[in-house]
Image (tube, rainbow, N blue to C red; front, side, top):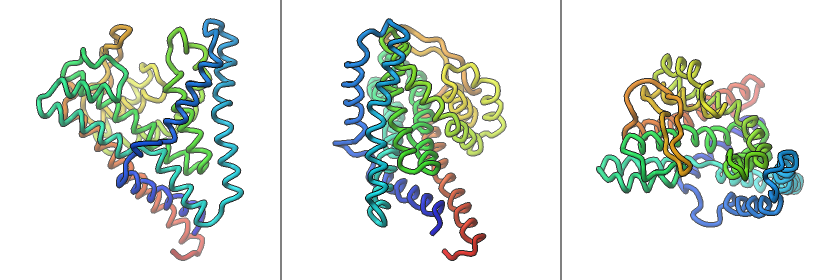
Length: 318
């Protein structure tokens, strides 16, 4: 079996495991990594107002928590072989993915909205977004959940598959660690404005290609012409260089309007409109889940065809 076909097979097995088992309820490695990151941040981020020092300490923080994990990964690569290393690759990619978890969180919101229980819907959406859920109306809850499905689909699903295919275990681990650090340190507030800059910039770089492949996937699975137009004209107005294309294309593919004002603890943030059409509803959340779900199988199908074609072209047998 050639290397690419082997990697695609690992992707398929890891995706099936994620659909079957979902995320571990206890002892998830990312939880432990998050605690380590919090410990390091408390030790290094002592003078957040000093720009130069804080930026340096933020970079040192990234290296402190990332390099040991990558070193252990490299050691395992040299010490394990055969089935042991195959199982390690499947396990790492499975833990990096969050397809079933994303679907479960999204459906918890849409089911509450369909049942007319706005308070429960607010509670459920508060688990996946940082905005002030108690101030959201029905459309606000549906908008927040739909945006989360699209953006987290790019970060926790498609980017993980991409980086595994590009760089194996080190690639997917580096991406998930950097993405986690950006989620923890990437806030533009007094404490993290400078300290979190390195994590945020590295996350932008690592997600640039996967985000655009995700946006293309959403566009091809929905209203392609509208998705392409929204991506081309609206994405540049969004704060994040990667979330913009993903959510603009996703909103266009679904034929709905996302973005707009959103309440946070610090106040209401006025955001550009993404997409075109009616406001989001409970059905929109399920449709956004569908884009991620079918997108994953489209990727696996295409990758499988390419891998088998390469194998046959090289004169090999399946």
